[in-house]
Amino acid sequence: MLALKKPSLASDGLELTHKAPEPGVGHTEVKIRVMAASICGTDQSIYHITSRPGLRDEMMAYHGRNLADYKPIIIGHEFCGEVVEAGEDVHPEVARPGDYVTSEMHISDGHCQQCRNGKRHICQNIRVKGLHLDGAFAEYVTVPSENVINLDKFGGRSVIPPRFGAFLDALGNAVHTVTEADVAGKTVAILGCGPQGLMATALARTLGATRIYVTDFSDPRDDVGSSRLQGRFQTARELGADFCYDTNESAVPAARRELLDRAAAEQGGGVDVVLEMSGAEAAYNDAGSLVKNGGSILLLGIPAWPLQSFDFGKYAVWKGVTIRGVFGRRMFDTWFTMLDLLASEKSGLRSKLEKIIRRQPIPLENFEQGFEMVRTHEAIKLLLVPSGADIKEV
Ligand SMILES: [Zn+2]
Ligand SMILES: [Zn+2]
Image 1 (cartoon, protein in one colour):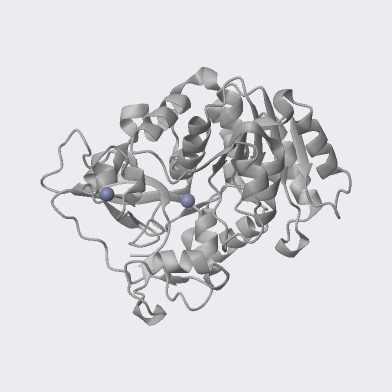
Image 2 (cartoon, protein in one colour; image 1 turned 30 degrees about the vertical axis):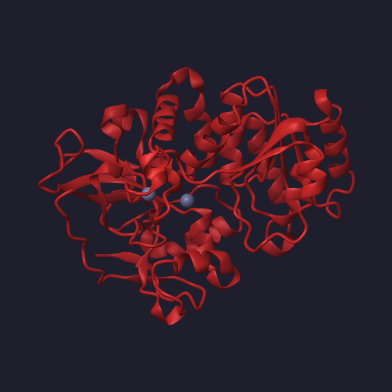
């Protein structure tokens, strides 16, 4: 079958193959024909792995110490598709051939203390399909039946068309972060105006935040110049942001000062909640500056390397701030919350999400073009479709 692999962790780039074996189906597994898969920031980082030492270590977690021990995997972890085969021990209520599904791609062991205490998303032995195990940039993917999310039970394609179904994994990260923060009636700063920041903006507005600040840093080295960022900010305003600031002071000299002054004028001298969605080092100190005493900072963005400059004394201890990491989606309450929000016409979430999806998918064979469009911020969320899939069905 057709598949997109990461052939080596010693160099950048990905490799398309037409000869990947189709995955087998164990007793309790479900085989899915991929309709569409979405490019995630993590996939971009896997592409450019030589500048992502932390992610490379993570990808090596189950391979041994030397990069030479790495065994190539198929990447991709945001997708939806149609069940083609269910193992003999899979209950028909879970998945039957023809069902429209997606999957939680974090595979927990089910046995560690965290798993047994209802925190499977932070399992000690978590393995991620598309990072540690074969993923979904392929014609077929197999997943454990307990990870299947049967979208036919949540309204099917008329409520969650494949162009949404293909990135529920990513939306789930934003749902997890925003719901952990409990934003109703609160002022919120969202750092990072990429897909996660934009989805968090839409969710914070939907869930009742009072004022939403969005920031990002225009960086010409990433081909993300000031004008492209202003376009993102326009989208953020359409999704519910009140104020958007480019914190690159050489691009927009007065903006960062204005941001800090405006946040400081909020009740309590800062915002209630900061959602750090960028992983950019400069954003952490912004988070500490913007949050009010006693407020909270939630971290979803993953820094490319250990932070050198975050001032814990000034921004956490003296201010009595709560800092919390957010990983993946809670299994499976985040999924239920998300699917309910999507199904609710009055939440307005679906029409907001339409603004961040590029409506024209790209054939998986042209992955280079797709990755380039995401890297240069020409597209926010972009779908790849395997050759066998009908582009019209998304
Ligand atoms: Zn992802
Ligand atoms: Zn576990």
